[in-house]
Length: 358
Image (cartoon, rainbow, N blue to C red; front, side, top):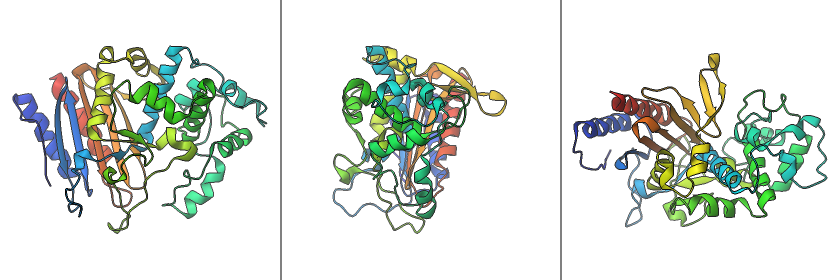
């Protein structure tokens, strides 16, 4: 295990470094990166059980691009908020207003789905289209998204019956985010990758953030199957890129989180504030809040906003605590399904928020 950190100058920074070391030891993974920012001051720790790569010079863990999985949705919904602020669309536009005309929808409720419903997982759509389910069950390591194109996505939507009246219940849906990307393209005439680059990545200076396996693949982190030696292919999202196809370096992820902590310092100040506004309550006794894109939980001093993500070979968590100016970006490659990254990282972020509150 190895770690890198900025030199602590205060007792509070000593506690941050200590908490990072404890969390690092609790995560069982080949590669782990934990990166914290507090009022712009960054602390970073790396570790894991993997041997150094054979290439010389080896790419440090904190310079790799990690798969964000479902955290990609926060980038997509920030794009939605930016487009809404620019007047290209409205959050409450019907989805069908930005899809090809003449789509043969079988169920009337489909016409009541809005872009806001898709962003907040309240459209009533299943997690994935039904025609992806058999392949996922038979081939758990096969990426069914890769060959799933936009036309197939639209056909699946046309025949899908919403589980409930749109806007009335929360049900997590990658299907919905894929449709949201198609709607944003329909509203603007540009594809998702172009929109994300023009309206989110470049304005925030995110030079180490890419989609799918684009860019220099030698700097992409790689996960493995349970045997620890068979690599898992990297994510190719197809029509689901907006739901799970973003990769980022730890440094870029901190920049992204710092923009949420200080929106006024960015060109996206209005959109960054918009995605933090609570939209609904969910969970046991409705104690959990969902903003336009982030999960929000109570914490000392004020709410904690976060999102986790997982792919076949990696896990990640991004979260921030506006009251203390603290944010955490956590990444791990993994062997098989479990590495304790998400639970450990969430507990770390909560503890950092509590430290700041006291």
